[in-house]
Image (cartoon, rainbow, N blue to C red; front, side, top):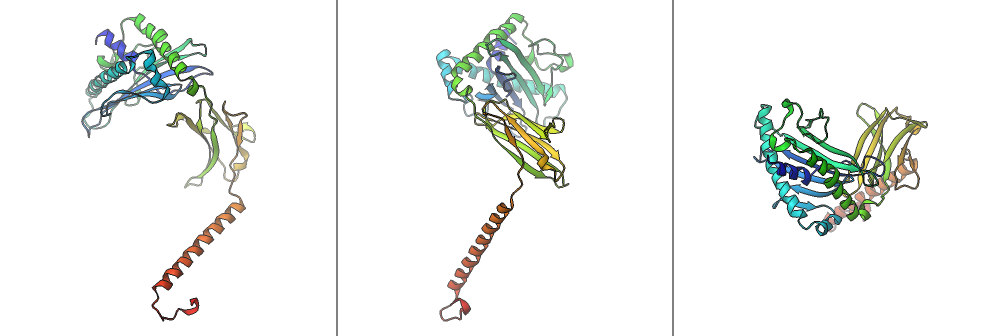
Length: 343
């Protein structure tokens, strides 16, 4: 593939929903995903861009008119910085869609896979900068069917590992000019990240505290799990720590990593298995910059007053149903017919 086209593919649309990797640092991440759809014949290609873990642009080959679309209000202002931005990134998205279709077929043939089934190619890439805007690291990774395809690469931005791991040239042939790769990493990616941060500074610098709670779950085998759930928070950095009698239970804790909530906020949970009857020994500590002080949460079993209230409500509903039935019965009785004690 021509080197200028390869560079456009790299510069254009990039990486995974990673949030900030360090305190005060910022990330520009994009992820390209192409996958086969045997029932429809033609593969689908989607690119999603993230700033500090928040989706801000998307390209979807399934759209009626495939274009790069803004996903936040603030990114629409990019046209003032670069009037050709939307046309250029749309062209790159459409070109990538064609490249991924070819690459999916190449990989299927290489691995001698059948025409049926779903197969995926993903490309993750972007950059991270420090609080003062300096490059911290670059990110570039390929995966086929969910498996890392270039984990052995030692050199940043080299996209071909051993010959047996080589994907089609249209997708991963490395840029021969190291200076071009370095320029993208040190100049283009950082420049756009800083531009996006300035445009979205009001939205991206806000702090939304988490709504958190502890829930109780009993499995069919009798095992009890306490789950500490946090949602609706921003930025993405948060700490959920389970304590037993004040001692951290890190090894015993199961985490679901922070994930986008779909509305510009994030969610996360941490669970710990406990001995039935010992729930009161466990405390969840929630720390987030949107909180004036950490939250300390415990599971609170339903109180007797709660059960009493529920019993009253159920009783009222049953009485209402009985009375309604009586009214219907009376209306159905014929005139002059003995109505018993209800007359």
